[in-house]
Length: 388
Ligand SMILES: Cc1ncc(COP(=O)(O)O)c(C=O)c1O
Image (cartoon, rainbow, N blue to C red; front, side):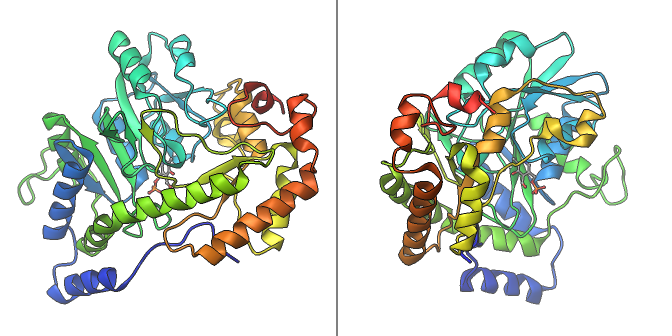
């Protein structure tokens, strides 16, 4: 089975980790500092603070900006649950707004009507490797005095008008094993605010500035030097590996151009880093996923049940009416995309997708879509994605 993701771990990573292990200095130290400095430079911000994972990065930002019970944060339901969970960890409430049907990102046009006197922050999720509409989101945040917290956990190096994800507000990144760059488990906060950066460095280390001088309440959210050594090797490869992902995406785009399915789009002024390559195949999604797996293609669904429909969220009374989100959960699937995916494997994916689409949507599907008679939609069609 071709997996949906595979980390690119080679001799460089093995040597880097082995060096740290041999050095005897394996917890947070010199390597973490070096990785933070290089990540801040890469993203184009003053500070990067390494954490044990992306969830901790989000949690520490939300705590650091002073969220309290009663506060609200506008975000999306079409995301990994960690986004909402990190908001909930402070006692604040996630307020879900719907997504755009073609990018799967927060629909910035719907943000303003969700703002209340209790809103403190907007948390766009740069899902699948594409940055949300930061022109609109920054403008709304500035107009209403809101903090922008970017969930950039899937968007390492993605850009919006030349600026990198994580540089439009306070950014959170994940370095989990399947991400575009990994330390097995790990994360970063990025910020330009000196005071927040100082607070975060204390917070992740038990509130300790000098040895056993506890200045404030903090915890252990640290990264290890073992992980950071892995991260430094990965960061060195990130531009090449991103280009590889983009080349595979371009090949898929060309191969699927004639199929009656929705392909990922990259709006003008943005670069997509293709953490996932997600397609909209309409109502036959589950049957198509089954066929793909049968053909040895590890297609997967991100995410089959939106956060607002999970029981622990419903129990908290966080109801939301999100037809486009529901549509994306029902209709989309992700295909294998990772730097080491060979041409032969790409051909296998392409062949399997064509066969499954032909089988379940039929040769006449494109014509039917034009007439509005099937569940499938081409990218950009709102009506189709809203239908359940
Ligand atoms: C969108 C999003 N937010 C948050 C996280 C949480 O990151 P982590 O798994 O490193 O805690 C992830 C990654 O898993 C993610 O994809």
